[in-house]
Image (cartoon, rainbow, N blue to C red; front, side, top):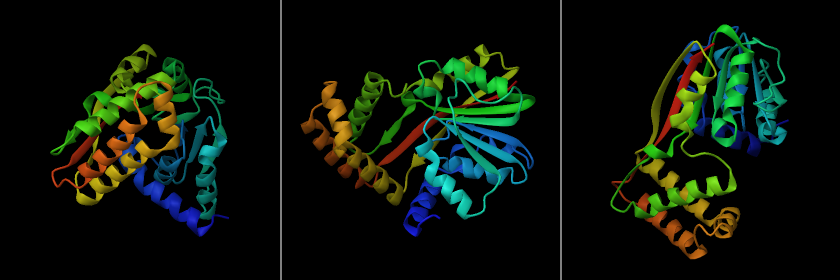
Length: 265
């Protein structure tokens, strides 16, 4: 059973990270009755939207960490969303036979791997001929920041990129590599493009600034940043203030690029 408080938290997460926003480029290719893989599903909020799109079909969500999708799994059961399943697995060694899925999604995963080519090859292996694979990755090279004072927010993203690389958390410029990875995996056809997710209303800007300020105060981030000598605690505290000030600026605007690819085996 999903508790009301947990249910509300999941519904907020689904709204913030919905299939319509984050997998909208793949949704037009999904039809009722299809078998779909969500590879590297994380919290699986996008997965629910995929299951709705193929309501007479089946969606399998895979992630390395069982705990990452546990709450959404319970939520899906509570709303009788019966056409999806969850599995623990590595995208570089998927536990499926060849050509079993009509479509596959791989969102925000390839940038976390030191060998993303293996995962792309696996996506091709498990997708049926005539099927389609959609992938999306971050691309920090195209961030847009508007407002009177953007130096602090820009410094924050410099720190985050350096930390990701130092901790080997993710590659912040994976987006620009997507087309090459799928071409190298010998997909029959590959189409790469980019879209922006924007924050340009008072409510969105304020919430975004608040979240980034909270990130600057996060004990784990502060410990990691100082451990790698990327920044100081004083600077992070100052950046939290800079984010708050930016969020109060009526001219503030933020847009983040996602590079995406559609590929057909």
